[in-house]
Length: 132
Length: 132
DNA sequence: CTCCTAAATGCGAATGATTATCATTTACAT
DNA sequence: ATGTAAATGATAATCATTCGCATTTAGGAG
Image 1 (cartoon, rainbow over the protein chains, first blue to last red):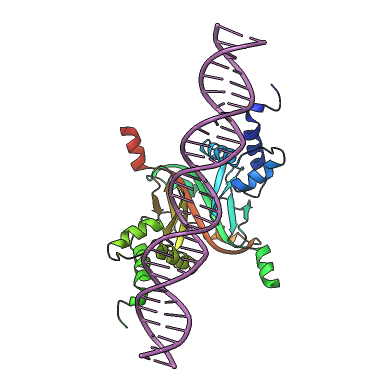
Image 2 (cartoon, rainbow over the protein chains, first blue to last red):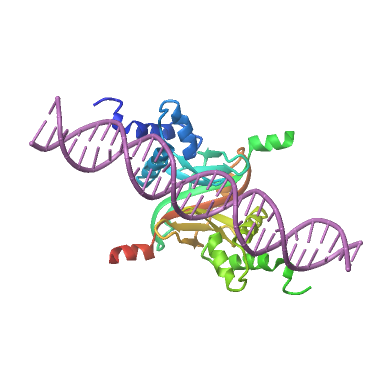
């Protein structure tokens, strides 16, 4: 078995791309990144595989920012901060949703995931504003 | 000053529609509801006013479910459950994000809002599945 | 080794939600 | 009455995402 299984070259590249960044990218961003190594990759392939990874729980989605969906290759529970000005998504590793909270969701159905998100203006954008 | 200010008839109707439902509707849903009373309302007007309300903090958005944005006329902080099967959005009034959590977000920028969301399969969808 | 099949992919068209444009209407102040 | 700025309706445009289909690929059966 080769390290580069040709069969899943693109698929693996997409997952690896997500795993090795913390920008919480869009499909388009992943596509642009991969074009360097895979000049013939198709945007449809990126979308297809992102959907597949999501279904299988290999990645998660952060939500839709400025009209485009953003993905996250880090499936460990963590909290996000979304800057509504520049659209950047940051991890808040300091914070965690208390387990008791999750446990207290009952009777509503089968809970599969939990996501805590803060929105606001990131420091970078605040500085830009002041300078301007 | 009349109770029915003609000037903002549609705008008021849109806001009232959001305030008086708990379905966390899409723009389209609001449009369909209002057609009864306002046969000449335009979908563009609904989108325009929803965007305006959102900017002003008079409503919030729950996020994008199955590709369409969902709104909430209840601006008091509360938690949501989203059924990924049928797309319904439910309020979890029993749960609240502890203030300490919010406070511990610091140094990242200016925090404007906080949203905790659970996703899964609602009871109704679970039952349907079993029956089938 | 060759043939077969299922999965993966590329390409481009189709879809669907949202936004932009522009002419018209409305309310209110002058 | 009239001017002005905002609100609206209708529809075109946009943009992210998905779909359809032909092609390629890998790996197994013979």
